[in-house]
Length: 160
Image 1 (cartoon, rainbow, N blue to C red):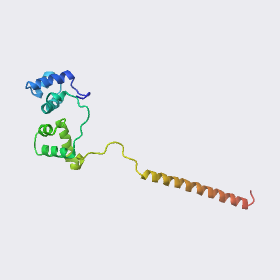
Image 2 (spheres, rainbow, N blue to C red):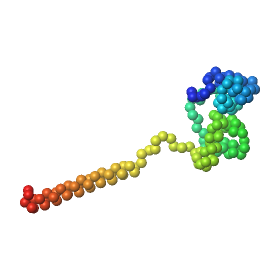
Image 3 (cartoon, helix red, strand yellow):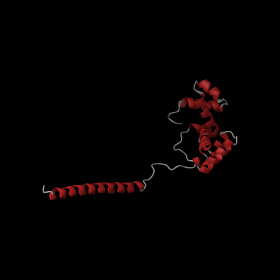
């Protein structure tokens, strides 16, 4: 379980024991005196993973594009979210809801894997740097030319 869970480890263990005895999530939440939301989510995970719902995951699991699309299509076709989640090995039915929302809002391509990390440097900034260098050099040469022209004019007038 995550460190920021609203349920204590003792509450989670007690809830799992009551689920195994046949109690529903609402009854367990009332018995423990905690909000129903976390208990409901724990109950859904327990229905999928059994007692393994209490085991903390070591790392985030990544899912293929095809698996995401299949799960979302089944969910949108009317299957209860726990069925595709358990059959496809999702960590939580909530993940399926998230994918379905992204699918509805942005389409199928939004479920494709995204590139991680900082984008690689491109050649465009190097060209801009070269352009800036040439502009500075041009400005310097124009100033030098103007200075030498003034100096020549002053010498011709006899001031130098």
